[in-house]
Length: 194
Image (cartoon, rainbow, N blue to C red; front, side):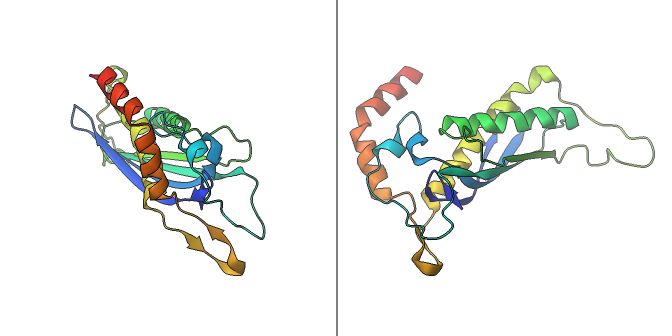
């Protein structure tokens, strides 16, 4: 798994809405170009120097790959609403600068743990969250998708494979250097949010 040309893999994140619903996201991140990687508005992909992966055989085209996103919630949403949740995952991917490649085979799936008796052979009663109350869940999906991908990148370790193929993890020393460089930008952004 290669994510923004660094070591990718599996990551998770979650949010709890003001109404107390939980939204969890699991990603399998294998997508994106390095030059497009932006985290919190900072162009990390362009700022990181060195650490170019060395893939000798069967090197994938830059930015090709895929991402799988699994969205779970305990909110009482029905199938057409779950489809709408899936449409919010690409917003989180896009915030990091990916999702613009034609070679990507993206898969999004969502499920709810509410209404556990909805599929009985007899009559069943379900609870439905109205569309007027679902916006916080959409926001949670977008935020958790973005964070799950960042968690993949931050937690990954260098991978050395067969035939001396090497994929480097996002270098923590470079993250620190870049954050120091953008400290004033971060400070001003946080003050603007207050």
